[in-house]
Each structure stands twice: as C-alpha cells, then as structure tokens.
Image 1 (tube, rainbow over the protein chains, first blue to last red):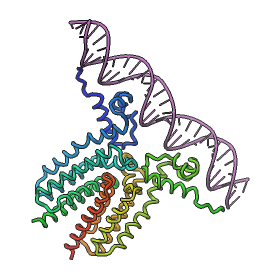
Image 2 (cartoon, rainbow over the protein chains, first blue to last red; image 1 turned 120 degrees about the vertical axis):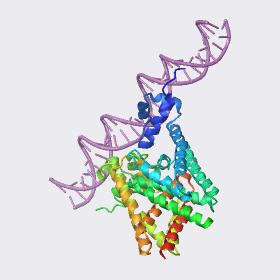
Image 3 (cartoon, chains in turn green, blue, red, brown; image 1 turned 90 degrees about the vertical axis):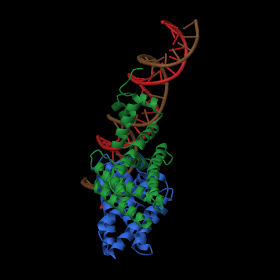
Image 4 (cartoon, chains in turn brown, purple, green, yellow; image 1 turned 30 degrees about the horizontal axis):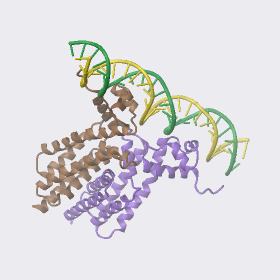
Length: 194
Length: 194
DNA sequence: TGAAATATATTCACTGGTGAGTATACTTTT
DNA sequence: AAAAGTATACTCACCAGTGAATATATTTCA
C-alpha cells in the first residue's frame, strides 16, 4: 500500500486534460500523453480502453469543476439577478485574457467530433451544457420570472457564443458585450414579471 | 485549351470544402482529398503549397457565399427589423435540420486551430465574422438605432452561440430560441430609439 | 504464519497503417 | 523548346492499438 504521490490513472487524466484542452483532441497522441505522464502507452491502455474512452473521461473530469466555477461567480456577485448573470460573463472575460485560455473544452471537442454524432464524449458534453441550462432556469424560476426555460436558453446561447466568438477574434471584449445582452434580457424578463 | 469540366484546382477546392466541413480539418488527409478529387497528391501540392494553405483557401471559399446567404434570408423576410433579424435564425434552424449540417465551418476550424493563434486560416475566419458584424451594425445604424455596434455584437454572439449549441445538442430548436432573443434585443433597442 | 496462487499494474518492443511532404520524370499546352 | 501541369514512387515520422513478459500487491489456505 505504497502511498504514491498520485496514481498512474490520475496522472494520465491530468495530463490528458492539460494537453487535450491546450492542443485539441486530434492533435494530441496517446504517445505524447504517456510520455508527459511519465508512463508507457500500454499503461494508458490498461486504464482506458481506447483514446475515445480517454476523451470521454477528459470531458467528464471538467463537468463539475466548470459548473461550480459558474455558480461561484454568480453567487459572489453583488446586485440583483441581472447583475449576477452579467458577472458570469465578466469573469469569463477575465479568464479569457489569460494566454492559456482556449475557449470551452466541451465546445471545442464537439466541434472536433462533429463527424461522430454518437460519440460518448458528446453525450457527456451535451449533459454538461444541459446542467448549466437547468441551473439557470431554476434560478429564474425561483425569481418568479416568466418562461424561465426560454430565458435560460438565451443565456446558454450567449455563453456559448462568448466562447466561440472570443476564440475567433481573440478579443475578450465580446464577453462583456454578451454580459450586457444577458443583463438586458434578464432585466427585460423581470420588467414583465414585476 | 481543352475545356475541362472543371480544373484540377477547382476540383481540389471543392473536394476539400466538402471533406473539411463534413469531417473536420485534422480528420481529413491530403491523400484522401486527392483521391476523391481524382488526382494525385503531388498535384495538390502543385496548386497549394501546404495543407495549411489549403485550409485557408477552404475558409476563403466559404466567406462570400455564407454572407450572401445571410443577407438573402434577411432581405427576403417580411416584417420590421426585429422580424428580419429573427428570420436569419429561423433559416438556420431549417438548415440545421438537414443531416449534413455540421455547424459553422469557420467556428469549427477555429476550435481545431485554437492552438495555432496566428494561423492564416484564422485570419480569414476572423475577417468573415467581422464582416457579418459590420453588416449588422450598418443595418442598425441605417435604422437609426442607438449603439448599433453594440447591438451587432449581441447578434454575432447569438449567432455563434446558435451554431455551437446546436452542434452540442443536435437540436435545431436552439436556433429558434436565439431568434427570439435577437428579436427581443432589437425590439428593445428600437423602443429606446423611437 | 508464510508460501503458493491470483489479481493488479506496468514495461518493452512491436505492428500495420497513415500522415505531410518530396525527387524525379513524364505529358500537355503555348 | 520552354513552361505549366500531372503522375509514379518514395521518405520518414507518427499514430492507435497489441503481444508477451515482468513486477507488485492481495488473497487463500496448509
């Protein structure tokens, strides 16, 4: 029962996470992942049955942390509902200015796997985005807004638009614009409700 | 001067367009493109100096047709400005229901090339998205709206969000939701203006 | 309790195949 | 003949995945 600093499986996943996010799924080989993780490729295949399996695990490992991050940004923000929603986008703007930022791992993986609709990683990705949407809808519902699900979809669209647009232009200002739009839509819904 | 049905260069570009869009940039090899175009790989390298060069040409070839499509959808729509904007999204919804639809080629390429920020294809992609944004801003300006550039950005964000979100969920309904949000934002801006 | 048996984890060395890109020669057009 | 276009056949690096062997726990039972 040697207490390793970290198990091989953990190191593989950590390394895959870093490389897949930084370089993209198809640009990263298992040879490189194994090398950077300090193990052999066969060990990767011992813990994951295929590259696709590792891709799926990669996305699964980002699910909770990502959602938690959004929640924290939302909860930590001052002001009313529109401002709290806007804060999510402002925090993305801040994150996007970091040189290592490369958009949303789920979206980029979806783009790469667009030719494999049933890929297990896509199921994980879709579920992740759905969780965000459901969370938003719940917040709007609690606030007594009309059509909370519709408004939540608008937020998702602005969020994914933010990730994509910034990736194209490498300009974090788009996140602030999205925050402004989100705030306006939420404020509009509140106006109608109250 | 044999009048070929189409020149080799045209066939290469057409084939690249089809395959890159359908499968993704890194998933498609020049060997396959050459084969499907009915020529040898060396001929590809005669007309394009590298794969990256062909990728750039691929995106460049989609620039005008794409923008023209959006314009047509916009102009053909009945109703006022909000409805015309909404029509763009409704038409995307229709297109997205076709099985061959795989999102936005520019966005998917940007996702794949996220690790190569200066890639020439990215310049083409960014310029394309900028043209859409500028066109929208011009329409809003002519209509006398306040802050036309800001509103145009909101439209771009919803548009790119639409492409991304549908790709993740394979559910064209998100385009209708985006159209609704876009309409509301434009109508809101018109309300303030007049 | 301690040795044998079993399960878990890991390595080395490999395969069959594909990828981007090229050296050279042939063919068509001007 | 010169230039432009295309083909054959190749290189060399890489990639997903595997076969066989080895090391390291963990369990079993004499």
